[in-house]
Image 1 (cartoon, rainbow, N blue to C red):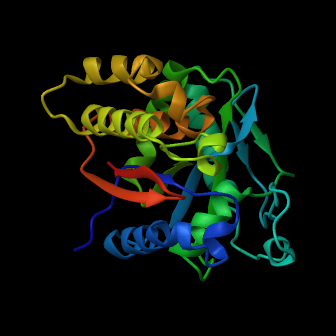
Image 2 (image 1 turned 45 degrees about the vertical axis):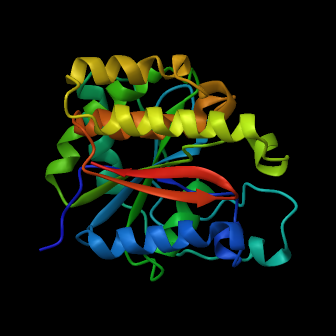
Length: 265
């Protein structure tokens, strides 16, 4: 019987490149396909993407969401990608109520579509686009503790067949992706990845200790080199907040020449 994870954090790569056959994303594409094949098929998917920030957590409630091509300078085919999944208004309303019950002001958005942090990985994992999908925004304070609390408020969804997916990137330094890889950049990349692995998986840590480390992630070795701005890491905090436990599996891979990772809870 296939497992049904509480939450999944993925590294979603650079813009539409994973869908364009880019060599630097081959491991990522294979990893996402393997994850989808190894877990139980969900009835609905909730994605927290690094590419949407609002003043309060905001949930898409559009029945048939359009796609937002929120990237620039790519080939024309990049702007013709389709992913015609349905929305799920009932799930959006349930998420809204769960957040409100935990004292978190939230908002439903019946206009916004799905950004590339949603449709790119889902087109790889579930290419038929036959699973309803809802997107939840980050909050623009980018406060780590709040995003753990946000995940905690979503915990009841883990009892249902809803895949809660944080879509970000364990390494997200745009200059470093396209600059030379020297000994120091490699060291900082390795240092932060090792720290993140240990924090997410160490069963000897109490959950209070684990949460404190994730809240103060910027103190980790290589943290601000790997994440000059933290929006691509915070979906992981939401996933941890859902599970509040060590992760059950880590996928190590290389994306665009940088060591990256994905986590299953």
